[in-house]
Length: 192
Image 1 (cartoon, rainbow, N blue to C red):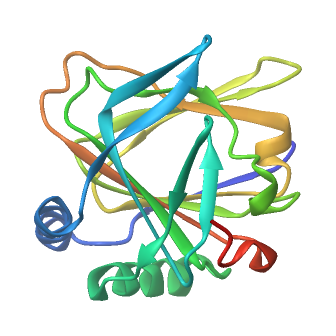
Image 2: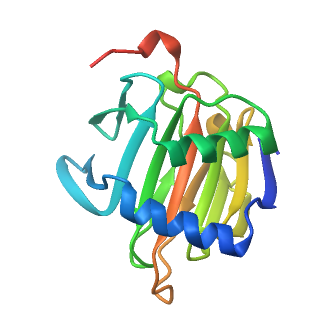
């Protein structure tokens, strides 16, 4: 595989994961995401939130978000991710999928603010959802289920050589929260 995908499995017990999921649903200031697709701006059903060490301005899909300050819970989660997987992270993008009718299409997290070979730690809570990676040239596909409390880390050339998605799964009737911890380039701090 060009790049690296490490699956650490569950890093929280079922009881811990359930409690964290409840807190994330209640404490995070969720907002609907917007994207520019096929020449028009759309508002997604999926909701997002963006937190970081500074007032990072993060642009993707022709939308710019300014990072909110870390909450105590998000700092705790970052500390567990760092202790488990290594690496450093100064920001986190959270996604709330209300049920399986919401997903994320094929994409790479290859924005210039993340650097040439970003290390992205993905932590999931709530419903188990499928996660797919597809090589940009060979079309080789890797599929896995991400369960509550589970952690994966993509690094190396995973973003330049692969795309990934969370496909819609209509049989999934409950919500999922996904946190993607990233290292945002220091030179972008405070840019709005």
